[in-house]
Image (cartoon, rainbow, N blue to C red; front, side, top):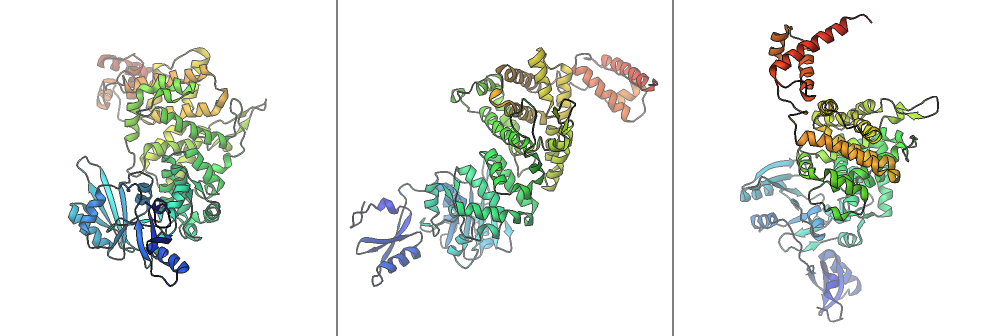
Length: 558
């Protein structure tokens, strides 16, 4: 279709046009923009303003039609990420709506129509949240707020980036795009809505880096400068908001590139200051990077390892020998790892994001534990335990849960153990013993599953292109042995059945209540794991012998 001047109307898809006697004379992102542009060139004419729908209709959640049916008489607009995602051909399950007034009242109307839950989300901004629970247990949310400003256009101009500053009129399903966000989407460009967008709310600096990474967009140069200028203001933002944006970055695509961007824009100094000390800290061979670059490489390798072990991965997708070996040896545990990562230690954050946070901090104590021996060789004695303490401290400052902090601590504290067993396997051909397997999971628990993945990423990042196939194969064999025992025969070594309880131990061994009872029970449990104990009678005999030997050794003068 063309206008009378011969211009294809497809050039105006998703735009508002001004027509005079059938000829398109101007266009804009909103009716008013098109009208002003037409008046500038045809001041004496009265143009017809028409919306040109997109060539491919936007796809929204079916929930949106239910909202439209519930509010047929209301001037209300869909805004933000759902509009952006629809234009990218993605389906967003969270809907953000704005109206001139009565946000909470409108939310209640929608909830009543849908039989959903509703509550005030922000009284100051008159914002209500509707939670719709589907039959399969999944949930979608609808937020309805009043304008930030006196009009829809002012609301959109007060937002963060132009690609998030578009709206769809629910009455007509027409697009309003006053800041040319659609053009920025097509150009894959991230641009701030105004000069004050980032300084008004510095958390948008983190959000911008996350969006750029998730969408594969470039940050426009002037916006990048604004982000750098706003970075020092992050100290004024609550730790909870920083945490939430940081974890969205770590949970998303290209975590390593995003963290590098955080560093380049001067953000890390204000949110994770202890990481800066890793820069320039040299490491001995086989390391090929300083501690900071090594850490970024670990994040990158971890991303690839998780992708290769994800359900649906096709082995033929890779021409990389080392990834192929990973898939051959550990690929059978895809479903188990998927289930592991589906579990939540906190409803707001994923186990995957927590693993990347842990990877970011696994060597944080190296600058503080570096020594040199008489030959000048660099060592980092105790960096694992010290690093666990430093990471836990930062996690507490970000208000992570106790379960999350325990997971982080367990992984970092034990992250050298797989390397030890890999070295033995590679050099001496020795597999981990039953005792080693038991103690590994006794000390790390379910965190051991994360620890294995981190160790593999750490190994690849350490050696880089110099990693020998034999060393990598040894590491994979070690990890396979640990995973086999954890998932395929846990009762043999990982969690032997209880043969005695505390009361049994006190009665059979004539012990008073106290820590010694727990020590005996643990010794018996390890005896089961190593194959020395299999019956109740053997457990009693083993406990007596262990008690005699340990009491005797402690009473023997040194």
